[in-house]
Length: 284
Image (cartoon, rainbow, N blue to C red; front, side):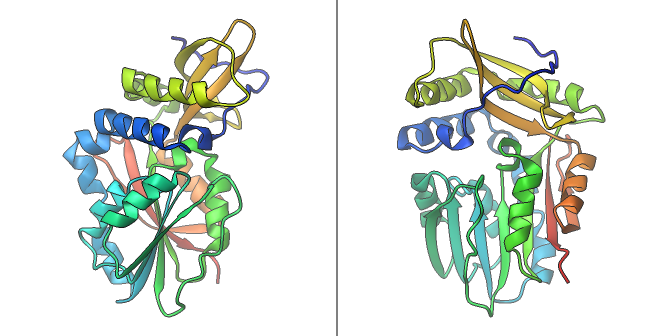
């Protein structure tokens, strides 16, 4: 395993959707989540997702709608909703429709629906009853897509008064690269390898035979940002199969400002490995 940062020509990357789209990949991802996720392993992280409720109860009207972007099976949204009144309307949106359907079955709401969505593309407007407040959630997604463009896409569909609550997996400490190396084992493990290797076998055009290598690299578009990568290395070429950005707190708050959002609150894991931000549109 090589964790030395390297610069040079950008490597081809599999689209994030290639890891989640089929039901079988969704099941393998679920096994990774169950066996490796700090959310399930550490009670403090589960409590982190309940922390914003006290602030939200003061900001939301009695009738509100929740749009859960990239919700997977809704486990993190469920923690939040344990401490909030049920939304009037809930949309569970994910690239894997099987997982979104599972989420919509378990999340409380007066009315519920699910939809397939690709967060790497322009987002739909999500037309909802105008009388309700709207809160968007984005849990566990930011590490795997370009953060600033994604936040800008969400900001672009937010109206005045809308709120966004999103999470980020952090590089603990002040050094992004050193902090990311501390959490590398959360990624380089047998369940994650089985999931990614299954995605490689399903991908078309078919990739040559190779080996999977995990490392910490500087993000190709922001070299001060640490990125954990899984690379598929063959005799001739290398592909990035999976990547997870691990920013510092300061980097996330720079993205918030550049995306046209303003911070309302921040909730930080005691170990500094994960945090939630509650933001509003800066539109006047």
